[in-house]
Amino acid sequence: MKSSESLGTYDLWRFEELQTPDHSRLYHLQAIGIGTLLAESLTSYVARLAIAHCVATGILMEREFTKYIQKTYGGANLHTIYHATAALNGTGSMATELVQTLEQLTLRNDLRFLTLLSWSELLPSRNLLRSNRAWCPVCYEHWHHSRQILYEPLLWSLQVVQVCPQHRQPLRQECPHCHKNNFVLAWRSRPGYCSKCEGWLGESSNDEPEENIESKIDWHVWTAKSVGQLISACPQLTSPLKERLVRNLLAYSDFLTEGNIAAFARLLQMPKNTVWLWCKGKNFPSLVELLKVSYRLNTPIFDLLTSDAINTDLKKTASLMPVQSTSLKRRSPNFDAKSIRKQVEDFVNKDEEPPPSMREIAKRLNHNERTLSRNFPDLCRIISARYRNYRKNNQEATIKLSCQEVRQIAFELHKEGQRPTEDRVSALISRPSFLRYRQVRRALLEACQELGL
Ligand SMILES: [Zn+2]
Ligand SMILES: [Zn+2]
Image 1: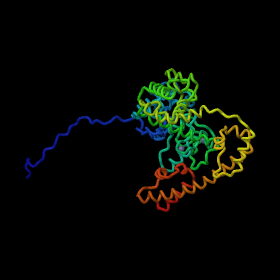
Image 2: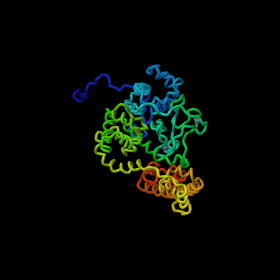
Image 3: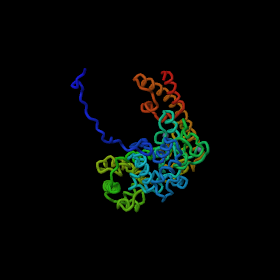
């Protein structure tokens, strides 16, 4: 028989109430890319939230948001606000209201970074956001193939951003199937698909951008990256942005033109009064103007708006300014058609290798490209055709080289025990943009198949 001493003593159970975290009414869905150039937009988040709950976006808003959203802008009834849905990603009260609503429903606290609210102090809302939905078909296709979540970066919603900085492709606004535009947020919004006909919006390989766009593409990529930098900085921004901008503009004007605002304005290629108002803090540049100023000062737009120590960077800029300022002062020389025609003819007859583009020739002759084409259309056509032909052949050769490179990288990655995903290969290849060509992607696929992956 067991004695009572052999029984152990246990702690008493405490029946105090357990502290469990609050449950959110809607899924606590994580937003994509906060703090990066490709941070998600708020309208994309709403669409993904609706998909997660297996309802149409319009129904989710109507049933769940009505309680929180005031009627001022048509409330949560998507039918009445279609044309204004761009503002949901912007700097104003529609964005604020939707952020607050979603944060209450999902218990997240980072959704304002999916809008431009962090920049509301500085960016005038006029012409800031485009009214239709825009997208990069190559991004969609790439995410789809690499099994990543489909979403819409906030970057695509800005009017000033016209190309995808990763694929150097113009953003699309027209569905390739039904040829219609989409609202930024629609009843059946779904990232990657047309909200009108529900067709797939991705595209695997795009042709080279059209010639007239291609000449501007570097500027557009630069713009997209600069704006992306602003978006990625949203979570770390601190006020006051306006004062910093004024201080930095004055610092540049002091250093470059000894405080002479008129000369500074000439340097920036902006009207004197406009620059004067900026420097006095009475007016603020639009996003497009900010981009131009930042480009001319060779200073990232982000530094211009946030740096407290811009003076330390002035040396770097100063070394670049003389080149820019002399080119501003250079006057267009008199146009002697006869002798210039002779010079252009020389280029046609010379058979230079590689053949120069019309832009290059215009630069060498110190004349405007358009003036040359207007005066000598026959010669310019020959030069352009020769250059186009060269580029086409050169491109084919580069695609071939890229195929070999992709194959080599895939095998090396595999040897190191890593799966040769498109992202890894893209980080190692010398021309990542060439991954958009069907042939190069096929080479990767074939390498993977050979490796038994
Ligand atoms: Zn893209
Ligand atoms: Zn469509």
